[in-house]
Amino acid sequence: MTLKKYLILMSLCTLFCWLAFVLVINYIDPTEANFLGFLFFYFSLFLACLGTMSVLGFAIRMKIFRDEIVYKQVSAAFRQAIMFSILVVGSLFLQSKSLLTWWNILLFILALTVLEFFFISYKRK
Image (cartoon, rainbow, N blue to C red):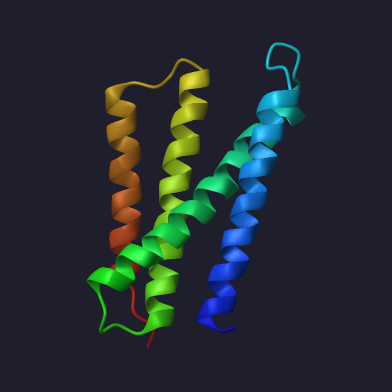
């Protein structure tokens, strides 16, 4: 898949996910929603954030790291977008359970940072 096709497909899927998120917000009542309603909310938000951060992260990485190989930039941007989306959705979930405190966020960020450092340092032989 070429870079242009990847960006077009990722942008269209991201737009679709944001549309799904808006539909979930408009049509699902949180006071009457069951587990499935909340699952749709968190999953559509996760995918929308993932796509948005992946495309934006790739664009920023292209401006900063012009000499790197493109597929490495795409994979790094996608990996970091996954972690950022987990942080956003996880924080919202913790807030919904009244468990979001500054030390929980700090531990969450620390765990994701350690995971990112692991992926950066991991090299295949």
